[in-house]
Image 1 (cartoon, chains in turn green, orange):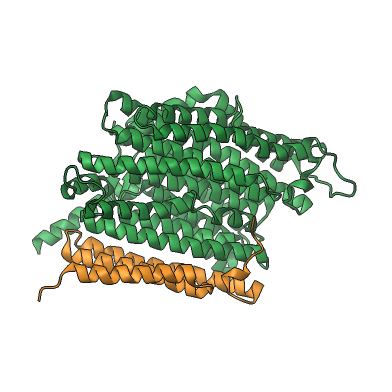
Image 2 (cartoon, helix red, strand yellow):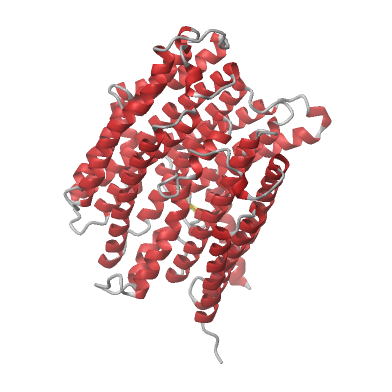
Length: 537
Length: 102
């Protein structure tokens, strides 16, 4: 009895003294959701607009994560597992939580400007938006297989509802049904993989998996060994779930349909936030194999090569499919698939270098630059992709169309929006001096270093380089329509307020340039994030 | 006779395959969701088996409890979306959703 009492006491201490304090941003978001729903119930508070409550909550959470990150870098706080090791609190997790909160603020601002949820539906919409962000924050800090699944589901379920949010639209309901059917299937397969992995290792804790696996895999066991086969099968099943969230070939088919059917704001949110969460989770899952014997490293190495081949296929497929598209949201959807491919190359290079037989100081440096490249790319991607979707949403409010040919000659009517779009597109293509160029450069450089370990990485690097050229042509089509074609007679006129809308567009489009011009400023921070994740220092 | 994990795992594997076949062959939206439930419950059976026979212990049971809760939440949202689809298309045959393609 006394022992149990002691155990409960220790659990309470751990929870109240360390864990809850570090978990405040998530609690703030949860509290905001409750506050919005309360305002809906109490007649006195009906007049309080939900978007301001949501914005306040998002700002508080962002400020809090910013402080935490600052203290982590400064050394006042230390990386530690929280909630008995279910979640991990470190630079990597906090960076992604900060990233997601910042993105949440920008998305809420965009929805306020474009007015996609009307007054009646605003509390529901922002509840879903905050709930999905909460799930992604948990994905980024997951340190246990249970949290991997919970995070993915907490991020997915609100997303399904958000996609179907446009009432009475056939396309929207179709997109939501496709998303929920495929998404639930992928989550089910992923859960089965998790159950196999948990059963094999006898633990759910991610950092222990590598060690536990090396206890059951005998030295020199090949793919014919049943245990190795089960491990590979389980890992592949988990990767199916993650690949679905990342829209990686061959699990990308939902992406264009969902983006076309959903509102542009929701599509922008899904394209950046859910990818960021899933990449953080993928990196954590990949690193779970470290600390094991040579046989386990070999399995992880093979997985890394497999991921690299998938990355090359994803980038190529995304870019080639984007050519024939006439709907701008659909084209941007294929472009997000292609970008997921580029970012996946960084993960592949990370796995290959981390688990290669010839480890050493040099390979550690390359793994660091892989993580740095991934984070840098995501950070640039936030601005360039959200910018593009925001301008699509703002233009849609005026011309009621999302077809590229209806963009003809827009530059004469709304030069600022077109300028913002041009900045985003140059960055998406990866032209210097935009942020997109330097981010691609860092990733390709680390893939190039990984070629010394395995020849397959040459293939990945080649695919990446060719795709950069492929990408050039279809993006240019949007700019060509905007700047070179004449505005047809009788087309709807586009007018917008310079003050909130123009300022917002500049605010999210100019950083794509800034991130390219001032990369050194960010490099140190990114390096710190990567080194704590990989080496614990 | 002492129970062994093999039989439980075999049943769970059969359930999983049934679920996947159901997901891939059914054209009815609700039918697909039933397949998903089968897959989730196959995983649940795995967790319970492992909690009995491996050091996973109570973790496995906690896993399955959370999965049950999440499956309910997911089913609620999925059914709402299916209803929304029905209101717009007057059918829940997923093949009839063909406006988005290309």
